[in-house]
Image (tube, rainbow, N blue to C red; front, side):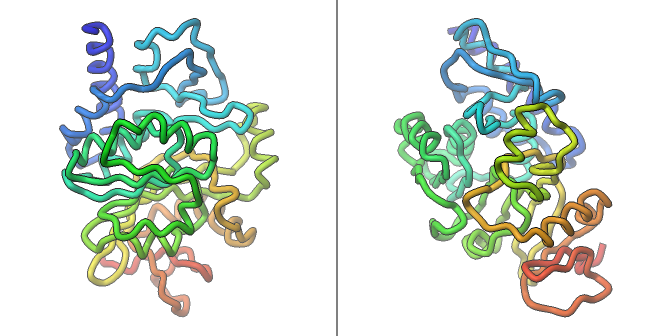
Length: 302
């Protein structure tokens, strides 16, 4: 047991160090403890590196020390679904600034590993609602998290399931626009971490391209946005980078809005925004990406 404990400690040190790069926020001690203590499932595993996610390596055995590295773990190989890199989640969860007793909504929980990380941070006095659209993954998450009394796993669509008010919302699936239901569910004092990515191709094309190792497609590549409710609206900040499997099957996508978002991501416009406007308004000088569903703008003064 001493060996696995040491491996988890080294793992927590690695992902917290990598997750702190470019951040002005100190890394949360509670989040560090979660990465050092929460098990990462049973093997063997199909893993890849964040620098080369298309090259998959089958571990030769189920040595429990093998996944304690900054590696992606495959969930459903034929759909290119993977448990994203720990250093990325460390960066994004640290930006979310979770606190003990928080109520958290985790959308796209997969098999529940990062849900368990969140649950560890908020503690027994908190509550985590984890929602997963893929029935097979939701079943595994429910099994994996059954021993955690303050976690509820829902097999369903996070864009339509109303989980009530949450202090923080963590979205682990790419989408082209902030979702109205999730925005309504967030308390004013906290925030939503939301991956924004151009989704210009059909699901089948994305899967084929991913399996073929085509690194030129746009689908799912984007930015993680921290969206925080304020007294006057929604403040945004970019917590890059983000590569998530898109929310196919959960929401309908507007091809024109997808195209505009893709252009805005390539040009860096979204990264310049400091606010999200959801109320109807005419385009003005503050608007950086103005579409019918939402507007990213420089509404707040620097």
